[in-house]
Amino acid sequence: MLVDLLLLAASLALLLVTAKYFVDGVSGIAALLGVPELVIGMTVVAFGTSAPELVVNTLSAVRGETALAFGNIAGACLLNAGFVLGITALIRPLRVAPSIITREIPMLIVASLALLVLASDQLLNHAVEADAWGRSDGLILLLLFSIFLYYTAREAVAAGRNDPFAEEVREEAEANAGPRHSMPLLLGMTAGGLIGLSLGAQWTVEFAVNIALSLGVSQAVVGLTIVSLGTTLPELSTCIIAARRGNSDIALGNVVGSNILNLLGIGGIVSSIRPVPIPPGGHQDLLFLAVLTVILLPIAIRSGRTITRGEGAVLLASFTAYMGWRIAGAL
Image (cartoon, rainbow, N blue to C red; front, side, top):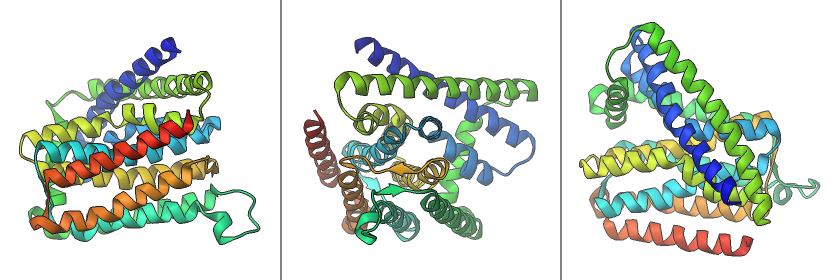
């Protein structure tokens, strides 16, 4: 089991490193082709921070390891909303831009509640034998994600430099642009990153399944904990760096945007590939995620649109208590 843990850690490290090369390569190619920074930031860079979750969960769905995919989606979002936000707020109180209150957080609430409702088939229809995210549910999630992207892009373009989201996206695109490289080098970076992502995802799924078998727990629990912690490291590091530099509003936008992408984008892709049965304990995970998401709105509004250190401590303590209860119940 120790060997599997070490190999899983190595696979996650490969995922994180090659995701960076892949994003840099694609971003550089887009810049050389004259694609605007706003477009690069909203597509390549945004998806790049969630590339580990995307490739791991997509491969899990293709291989039929849907419990692992469910655990990783729910776990990554719980980690972001509870652990990452809590740690970041403890480092420095998080300023909340008005657009996050009026646009991003409400959409995140819709996303979390939609996932919970779509996972309650038996409650809504007693004739259904088991709860699952079906392919039709996946299409609904992707439609919601497309609407969010369209609405956000339209508002950001209309507001220009006055829109915090647009400015954040441009800054992220510029930060990821790095020095200009030649097209052959960028193509090589992209191809190498893609190969590394594929291998890292394949090994991550394989070793995560081995660990679940060794511990005698479900794949959902392994995805909820070990794999989720590994795949959310980019968000955690980005938020900590942003907070220490005084850009705490960027940290909050990164967490909220990442969760929307995980729930609607990645959740929609995974369940469109293969129906995802809700594993034991899955409803509690989705319910707790919905609660964390809903209370995020009043927390963001009060205290002069600032998430204080005390509120960050509450988020972190709530997440720690829930995960401790969840793991204890699985062992």
